[in-house]
Image 1: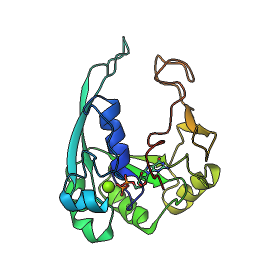
Image 2: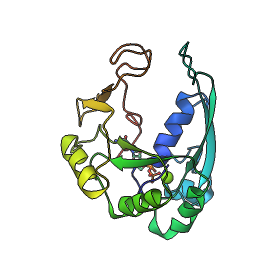
Image 3: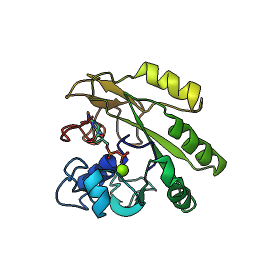
Length: 202
Ligand SMILES: Nc1nc2c(ncn2[C@@H]2O[C@H](COP(=O)(O)OP(=O)(O)O)[C@@H](O)[C@H]2O)c(=O)[nH]1
Ligand SMILES: [Mg+2]
């Protein structure tokens, strides 16, 4: 999980752990009780200093799918501050893939570009995750254009946001998953933004 500071890596990590049943209740960075900001200073300051490893199980119950079966995903929540870049580089060397988090409001930051350069150098498959779609000033088409211009032209949107910039913002899939019609089924249906409702969300 990579991004510039405050993009929302720890919140997204917490939500993934909660949604997949690793933790029984959803913590928040603002309350200082997340799973991966576990250090004293991290909780008090609401920032990630050391990379933290967590895991969840991804269930893929689609019958007839050769890739079906439970998959344990090990996830590394990294610090975003440039001062801690050595900590991030150390994490990169063990990854199979990366999630690069970008805020729909702040967009591509200098640190995002530094991280993307490292990801490209290491040829790591990268999922760009745009969050804060619920915040006022969140952008969609303009942000996609910015990502293509400032980060990489090789990016394909897989969802479309509805009710952008409101608390009820959500996404609908643009691509079909094998065996699941686009827009149909529980997994493919409309989903709530991952961190909406987090207290004091900026
Ligand atoms: N409104 C809103 N706030 C968010 C979202 N994701 C994270 N935040 C807030 O953004 C701030 C930074 O989040 P954090 O997870 O610590 O970011 P990190 O530095 O990348 O780990 C916190 O105040 C979060 O509550 C989101 O999707 N929407
Ligand atoms: Mg963090």
